[in-house]
Amino acid sequence: MNDSWLNKVNWAADGLVPVVAQDTASGRVLTVAWMNREALAKTVSSGEVHYWSRSRKKLWHKGEESGHVQKVKSIRLDCDEDVLLIEVEQAGGIACHTGRESCFFQRFEDGKWVVTDPVLKDPKDIYRK
Amino acid sequence: MNDSWLNKVNWAADGLVPVVAQDTASGRVLTVAWMNREALAKTVSSGEVHYWSRSRKKLWHKGEESGHVQKVKSIRLDCDEDVLLIEVEQAGGIACHTGRESCFFQRFEDGKWVVTDPVLKDPKDIYRK
Image 1 (cartoon, chains in turn cyan, blue):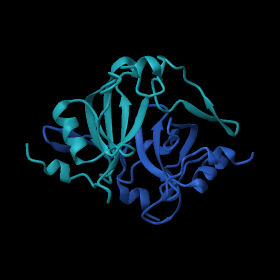
Image 2 (cartoon, chains in turn green, purple; image 1 turned 180 degrees about the horizontal axis):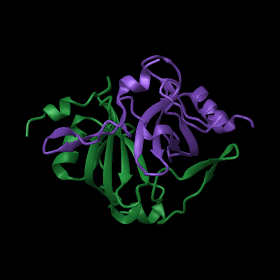
Image 3 (cartoon, rainbow over the protein chains, first blue to last red; image 1 turned 120 degrees about the vertical axis):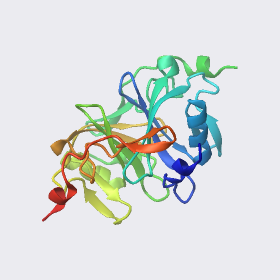
Image 4 (cartoon, each protein chain N blue to C red; image 1 turned 180 degrees about the vertical axis):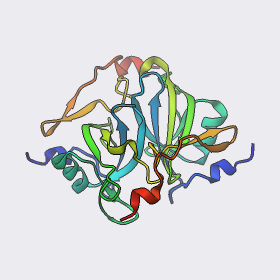
């Protein structure tokens, strides 16, 4: 497989694009993170989502510590070719480092942000070595 | 309503955050665009999605030309407070400027990007004045 498909993506000046991960079962948007070329290539070759961690400045195999990997079901590109949408099977049903299903657990209600989703597993139990 | 809820959002150095618009009926991710404070404030006050157009460098009332406005059903914020997820009712069932339901109409298959979604309305008929 040549990598012309990687060139089709309009990588930003910093080499990244935003990536939306959506749960294939529930349809819920789980998380938005970032990929560079290497992350997308790894995601395709391994079948598990790899992001680029902007805070740690390194490739990040999602779930490498928690076990909450994201299995790729489909990868989509938008009309401007600068955003990816990945349909995933979420291991453990937990995408968020807070132990919740989705990172989008705060909802705007009457002028404030309200936490609406339960913690499914204590992060202390997710991340202990 | 004071605007402390706007300060809760971790606006990037350029004043923007990415925004995922998801269709409340189909669950489909329709588009990813950007908001600044003003766009989010307008979105909340009007009940229709306003983005910040990075190419045109101005506030953009989604659907202002096409009529394909997005009515806000809910607004969510992620754990890092730097991405918004908005559940919308999509007027006309068309979010994309190409006349398709979703901007994510290209799917990765066997090493290439394949257009999988039909054009529902010719853009010439959407945008003529």
